[in-house]
Amino acid sequence: MGKTETILKVKDLCVEFNTVEGKVNAINNLTYSLHKGEKLGIVGESGSGKSVSSLGVMGLIPNPPGKIVGGEIIYKGENLIDKTEKEMEKIRGNEISMIFQEPMTSLNPIIKCGQQIAESLILHRGMKKKEAMEEAIRIMQLVGIANPKARAHEYPHQMSGGMRQRVMIAIALACHPDILIADEPTTALDVTIQAQILDLIRKMNKELDTSVIFITHDLGVVSELCDTVIVMYTGRIVEKAPAKELFKDPKHPYTKGLLSAIPRITKERAALSTIEGSVPNPTEKISGCSFSPRCPYATDRCKNEEPPVVKLDESRRVKCFQYVD
Image (cartoon, rainbow, N blue to C red; front, top):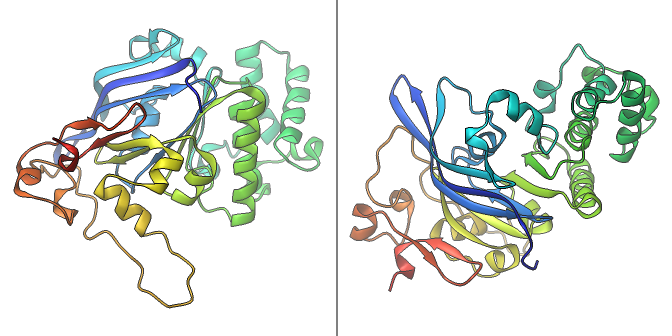
């Protein structure tokens, strides 16, 4: 994908949470750019900070216990961190939308699905109730919900998981947002429905030129959908690269570990590859590189010093001492 207009720039973002065990640095100096029409994948194990980073962009970090303590989130030349809640309400769901991870807990169980889609149209686009409902039905049809007129009058519990996820996508796309954040939108869905949801996001990206931030732990999905990939670990970006290059030639030991752990169909039976250990407890203080306790290539320097972000070329970055001259 060629260079286009930068629609979102996250710079040195830091988010911390106050817990009973002390302060937790959930996001550490997160920096990335999103271009118009780009599909950006953010990957990593649970606890790496993927979802927290997206909640920061949406202005939805729960406070207390969470708080943005540093950095900038620049959208259309303005810092979203400086916006009031009222100002964010005009942007959220209108210009920047989010598909949340679990539709059953994100949808209101006592409001009909059509009304939940129409609500954002009334709020952000000033439509009358009848007009908004007609548009909601049209959007439901657009996202592949069969018999949308009848389904618009159903409650979330009357729909399957795949249909509920489509309702969530309809809500997110109702106002034709500039940015769509999809947080694990295919989790717990069967592979057929997953493929349909990915096709739908791809279609919206192409037809509406919507920029997409796709958060997942599924590298197979990322390879299929995304232009650029960010790999996160303990709230930091450890590698950033165009998707094709990252899958062809991963640089960071963590990225290599994630890719090697993908099951492969072969004639010979082989043990699944794993990354030793687990993501550290957020309250645990690790000196040096946070991945060093699990890294097969770790040296004394890795265990004592924080590695810098190394620019390999115009599109590739890696946070590892292996690439320091």
